[in-house]
Image 1 (cartoon, helix red, strand yellow):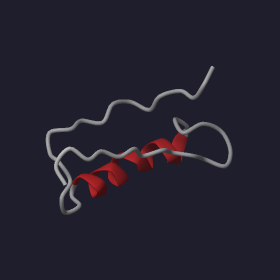
Image 2 (spheres, helix red, strand yellow):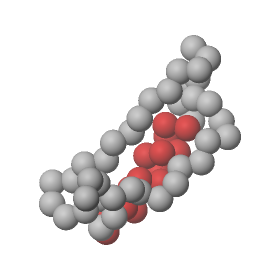
Image 3 (tube, helix red, strand yellow):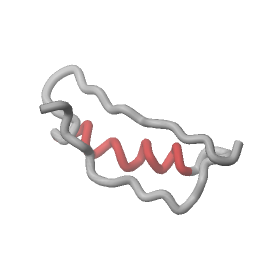
Length: 53
């Protein structure tokens, strides 16, 4: 439906989401989400955000 939104949250078992393999895997996962039927175009993913301080 128009106007719906969602959130993708990354979690790793050890370290940070910006470390190595976790960080390298995010772009491909986001591309799959963007290519899903009904996904809005024109949205750009920004860099991963740090968790709560």
